[in-house]
Image (cartoon, rainbow, N blue to C red; front, side, top):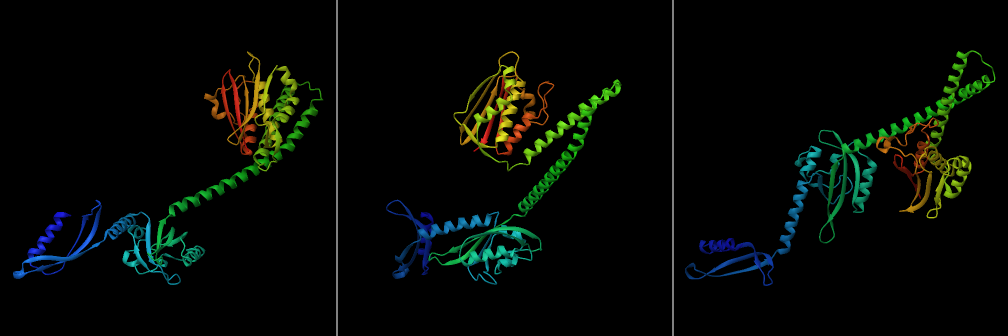
Length: 431
């Protein structure tokens, strides 16, 4: 500021003026810091108007200049904010409400008003018939306690158009702690609100459609069971009769095969519906070892005929909280699949173990069987009626049931497999 100050001083000295000279500038202090000052002085002139000295005083305004700079920054932020800003007087809180003393450009853009139309009015100018009175009561209660508050209401633009206004207010106090103003930050969230409403509507429709579809499936499956049972019974009775006509015999055999397939499909569908519609399935503490023993006892002849070697280790996590029936079904399906799809080139080895990791119990079920080509079938592995080997008794239902039972109780299942190497299932049970 050196050159500017000297120039001002010289102009004042040689101008012949007697008025007070006031300058603002920075000077360097002994410690090297800079201070901002107001320097007020006047000239003392001697004979013939010759200036002989200056008398004056300096006032340190460093703090006020810093505050002024800070306020300028805040004003710049408010002015250029994309959110609407309203500043009102602190009172009155009751009708008609505190008057508006400041609005930024964003608020004008949101509401369509001119600045002159809002200054001196109260924020009630934005309210209308659809403005939620409960939310306004919540706002008033917070204001009476001089507390911040955030609400979401319908407000009105100058042209009468409604918009969803999400705004928060907070009181502003002076240096003595006396509240002098309210500041409100306002956002037009109409688009977001409409998206949320649309999403909720869609969820409701999907939920209702699922209920209707489930009800339709129940009715269809249960209504089919009775006539199917009658048809199966009638076909069984016909078997006791001697039929000599080869064409009729062929027709009856075809009808028997189709009826049995349809009956099996309906029974599979009912099994799936029971799992999908039983979120409240009883869960108890069950032992992996005891359930596996029950399963192997039921199919011990299959295990023996396959010359299968079972390697089992449940020491790290012997128990889980789960459905006893579901766990038995899961182990049964995985075990019979391994027996069915074993390799003819090597002895079947099945490794089953459990352990805990990050508060999750994991069950590993691994075999060295035929394996599955995951490159081709990864997205179909747990699909309904998906078969990956040409075995006449394969239905493609087992893995679908396993996945459904695991996920219905909050678990998950993953598969790793290579052709002619084996398959590994990792089941995570929610603790």
